[in-house]
Length: 177
Image 1: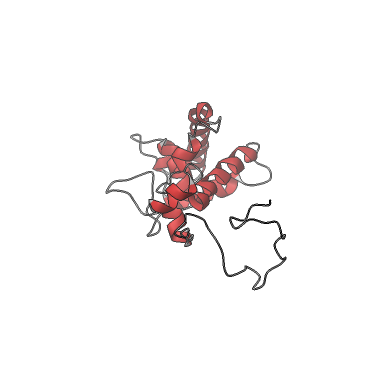
Image 2: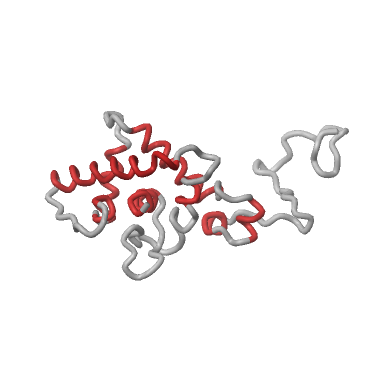
């Protein structure tokens, strides 16, 4: 899982979790995809991706070996190849994975989408649970807390005005009658 953590950290970087953390490069301060639960999202039982993750990590590590060889980067033998790349080299490699000529581009796009979902929406958690426990991504994004009744209501409209009036049969909870 270190390889997938390093991939996610390249897309949405965060600070190291502990001294010697190699998967998280520590390129920024604050939370990133790893702290936000990207591995929990990728291994979620609702998502049939978990059996494929070892093969995806192996593919990413193979790409890292090719990258390191072509750029004369010495990789440590104690960690997976992608994890052994510096953040700068990880970023350059990942950038190439999203190129239109890359045959596995769709795979990396799906993984990046899921990485974003882990950070931006806490996809592996119930929203109330994520907000109440201070999910790092939602907290960093300033996601609002629900009202005292546990419901989210937004008094300020995103366009600065109501776009439509509620249907007369709409209940107090917002449900159509």
